[in-house]
Image 1 (tube, rainbow, N blue to C red):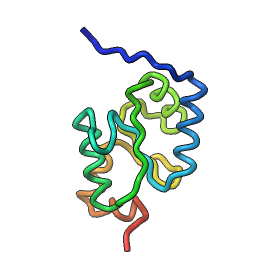
Image 2: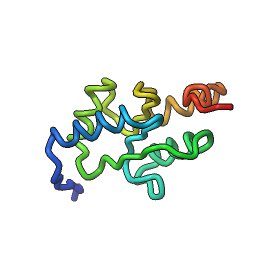
Image 3: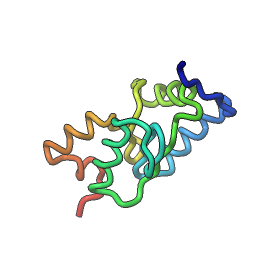
Length: 115
């Protein structure tokens, strides 16, 4: 049996939330679950990597309207997998990209919040 959440959010509502979140936050992470309880390993990895460099960042749980969020985010990134990280309105990537940046020592600079 596959879990299919019933979304009470319309496509327009999700698109508005995505647009506003990206525009109004220095760092935004669209993920499965939330910062305190990620619902997949990739989301957990992204939270851990960002948390090493940033205390405050916005997380958005896409699970209540997964298909709508994927569609709205694809318009910004051309990327259909979750999680997705945005910094100052710019798409950075998923947990794999964050990990690569971290390995190279570039994640703090990418998050634009280093000392």
